[in-house]
Length: 333
Image (cartoon, rainbow, N blue to C red; front, side, top):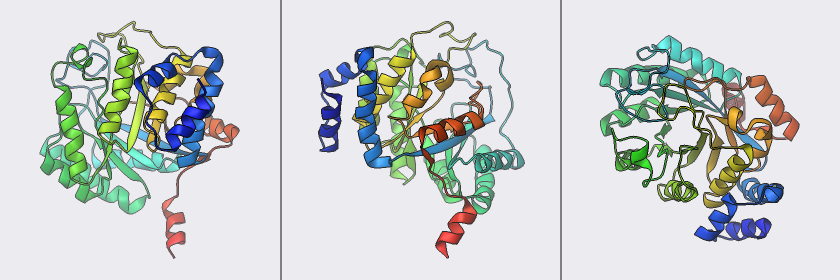
């Protein structure tokens, strides 16, 4: 198969078939560079060589009643993790300062739990208002199964994006969690969209799903029209039901990123959790399909040193897609 021609077809408006999607995931390793070149043709058409940086803060850790099999913070996990209630305004502001300093354009406030209390919504909203006054940061909140009135309050405070991952395919969902349904997740994303908040929703790869499940995930993310698609690669943590799972290799991870780009050509695709341990030395190649990464640490696992990420982008000849508040003010004058 000509990966370049397939990419050109996508740029002409064609959708890839299921056979073509499977061919991407089964791409011979000796064709990896050709596949990534095809992905890059699509990525470059919509995003050039710009890379969006995101920073995540674990605003509330542990204490979660859900039974998600991948998560060290779940009720069924025996992993040792920090446990604390929602951060106060000052702590959330410190995270925003770090995001601004590292050149991140999006600051992601993430909290464990099934969904937020009204008090927690008020805490986050108060911090967001102050963050928006000080920094030119896009704010993404990830607080679980949120209620419409709560989401509206976040939007009023300045939250532009809300993350709620589908995580896996509908077919594989009950093998990963039973404390909420797949439709609970889809419905949350749809409600966020209805309120005019940009939806962020993605997947976790490597949880014993089939290749067809991966394709179904990519198509589901297209169907819900997620603006930003974080692609996580399982970093199995001892004490979780998926402890010891190690199905991934760097080349397959690249194929998954290529698939996401071919199926969701116009969307922000972010290499997210597990990037460092799964892509390893092939991390730079991932950015020929994806156009976004996290800098700093993740929720309960460490990320790559931020200066290493910046050096990687510089070596690739890529440009950080970010405008600081003071620079934006100059542009507006």
